[in-house]
Image (cartoon, rainbow, N blue to C red):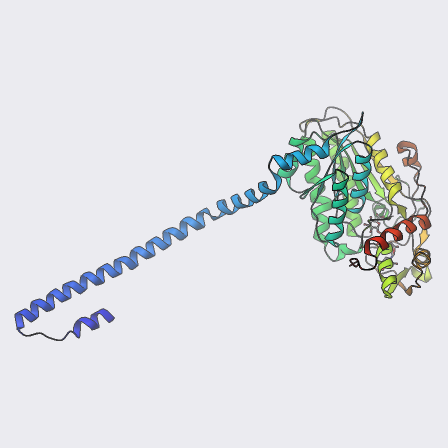
Length: 435
Ligand SMILES: O=C(O)[C@H]1O[C@H](OP(=O)(O)OP(=O)(O)OC[C@H]2O[C@@H](n3ccc(=O)[nH]c3=O)[C@H](O)[C@@H]2O)[C@H](O)[C@@H](O)[C@H]1O
């Protein structure tokens, strides 16, 4: 439009023809300009459309590629493989080669270092999620690294990563401790329990069943599977079909899933029902841990009680005893019987209680902490909330004693003393504060 206006407003020059032919030439000239201009606009539009369509049609590929390259850049390379191989090196006769999932977790760290100490090959796997302060997991990682255990950063749901790890090392055993823990948090974030405790477990077992040779698997179940069971002490043969929390339900589901993979594929599977494990390098989401933090801060703590002032008690089990149980389970695990996804004969399937056999009321736990910390707790007694907690746990460990040589030796007083000593040295004055 503006160019038209410009043409019409050209001042006339002397001589009509001349004027006319000049005018025509000018019109022609400006038509060419106009045509060229619009052609450029048109071509430009075509070019933009073409560019956009090619880039958008290639976007899934390119993003997939970038995702893959991200993955391979962190999972790959000779240096990475070298670290894994060094960590997996067996240094004792009859040593085993173990993939420990959840290695930066509380039990995972202790089990990994115990295995390494006795000369087994150990490779850790952990996704370092932020369910609780990841800096504690990083500190455990540093501890393990100094002991010669390398932790691969990744998720048990990542098949490609599992494949790479098994390509590099022929693991004879998997100690599967990666899980979403915590009874009460299940009401806040239910899907995290499904992701780790169900999907993650199935993914790992799917992978192990196809491995050749198949590893033997020992994994963490929980005392919480006893749920509303009232028969005490809890024995492995007691009913476990009344879970009181989603956490418990996913652990119970894990036990059934283990049965299936043992039955169909010949995987050797041992589930360990841990009873409220505590100790140095523990989990900050557990009561003994945050009670310690809050007592030291002068904050009040909630102590749960049952109906009619009923005692709430736990069969608190010290970490070193649990570690011995885990090693006993690994050492007595028979080989899986299948290979490449096919069962060749019946395989071992076991479940054991790993507890302490002496339940302690939560209020007594607090009294012990007060003595050790030399600080009086601000106690607020309240009714056990309806959030998945059970009132009482008590393990019968005779089966584990017989089959695994499991014999807990640490009472709560002794174990908490060790925990408090660690807590004060880790979080003590001038250092980081527990979150
Ligand atoms: O054996 C297991 O399989 C589980 O053990 C652990 O669960 P729990 O036995 O519930 O431990 P934990 O939370 O430390 O509460 C301890 C006691 O303090 C009471 N409790 C708790 C919180 C509070 O504010 N007040 C209180 O009295 C509470 O009622 C309870 O009586 C693991 O977290 C879990 O992941 C799983 O491994």
